[in-house]
Image 1 (cartoon, rainbow, N blue to C red):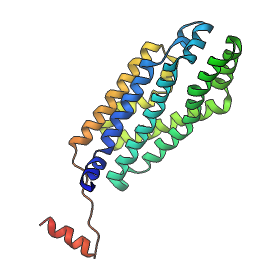
Image 2 (cartoon, rainbow, N blue to C red):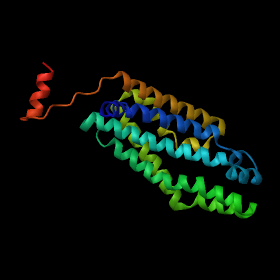
Image 3 (cartoon, rainbow, N blue to C red):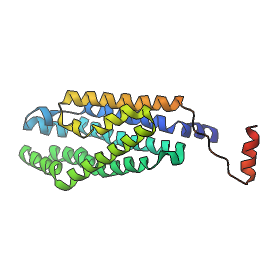
Image 4 (cartoon, rainbow, N blue to C red):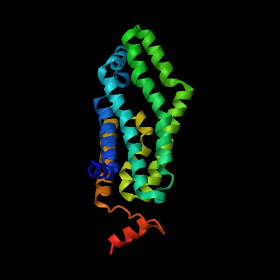
Length: 220
């Protein structure tokens, strides 16, 4: 009913933040690492694994949920939130095409092409100038939004750190990437917990209206 839906909407930023953090933590945890720590055969096996698709879908979903969390947080705080959702949502929109190509394109190629052709096609998909530029630009926009979010809400500092370092963490060992995912989840959960404990800002009643007068009377 309407009351239950209202209660769900009230906790939307917290729920989206925890879901996004959990999915982004799961991404490196369940991802096959044969393309980073093995030979050509291991690389193709990683791409062909169902866990490759599951992990990358989790990663995409994690960023979408974090963007939704920031948008819901913006609706709660109104003008005080500035343009933070624009930075984050635009960044997610820019990076998702590359994410999708890695998720589904490499998986199909690895399962249908000979090893040499699969690796050549994978390198072409992953190393193209346009897609790499879009992916990097998307992560940079997300990083800007994360910094602005932390400036508005200090409880998002750890989450901001994890998002700012998301691009450089692609160049470290798998174990460090898993640890980074744990830090990101901790940051998202801490921000969500802080939002639960922080009173929501009161909305000003409409001026010169019967609705505004009724709201004022209920507060007396």
